[in-house]
Length: 510
Image 1 (cartoon, rainbow, N blue to C red):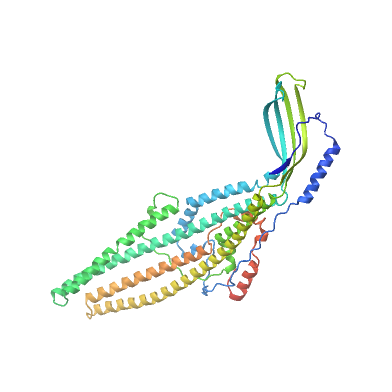
Image 2 (cartoon, rainbow, N blue to C red):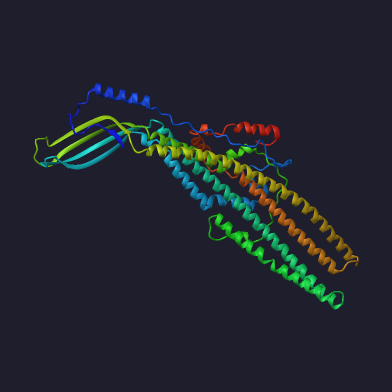
């Protein structure tokens, strides 16, 4: 329930009857209303995320650290680089996110259109009260609502936050696509390598079965020994199906990531599995506030909630503006003493004052204020989740590295044993059965080593996905400037200080 005052149209002074003193008084009233109403919105909450000064599981290796925007190049695999480039260009999820950004940016460019002068045209026919005649009316209506009491600022925050959320979702999609493409590719190459080793294992177990049959005929082996050798061969053959299915699944997943219905034929041939050297991390925990899209999205959600709360608060105050109209009427039919055609101009303030609505507006404001407080907690939770996920990924990567080192040492020992058996065989001091057994042990050690290297590569991918590693979209610099222009107070306090202190104390950080 409210009171709306607008220029009267029932009284029709002659056209051009507006006097200069009236215009001056109207403009003076508008200026007084502007001073009373003000233009500023409610203050934004200050975000103070609880960030550690340094990573606990950061590697101390002296080798260079990958760039967050091209971290997958640490694998030195041109085929992987090509697939990621194609995935970023053709992935359907990324394309959807691009269109969401386009839509949000289009609306952001017109965020203040509601608070600019509006002009409309209307026509209608209306009879006189005594039904003696009917008049056709044509008119122009102009209205200019002022965005007082924080209404314009809050609306700008909402549209700016919508754009920021769309950009965060876009970057999250790119991070996910890059990480998934790298993970699936490495898994496919690892399964191809595993398939080749399993084929060698099948050949070695087949030789072992043949040698066991010979030894059984010579009464040097029992039927149980032959049965165990045959079971070992059957198990090795059955193991071939798992990597074959995994390779086909990975090729299908890569096709989906690239936005295609069929996988590439170039990925059928087995290729060398990517390898990682010793790497280090040169980012500080505070960098997550800038790079991790989930945190940036939560930050923009706070801005949007603040804008919604500001709009709800402004609805409890009057809507103020200026209005005017130019109406021309002409008699269509009938007889009356009034002129057959005439026009009228009206101009004055437009005031909509909420008086009594059973507390609905106040309830909406309190609800929006509660949602704002919840969004601040959600932001803090997003920061904690990002730090925990990154720390876990770092710890996993370090453990996989240590495991790979131990298995590499064990593989070297097995290779020495195979070489020793080959030398003894050349001297006639070892038979083929011993050499077959050592070859089987070598293949099994290589399988375990390949699995450890693949797990380390996947842990490396998980780490850079947790940190938000992906190339920035084109035009992101200007977009970020536009987005951050209205949320400077949302910048978490101490961000630069945390990053600087982490750099000085621990040797990490940019």
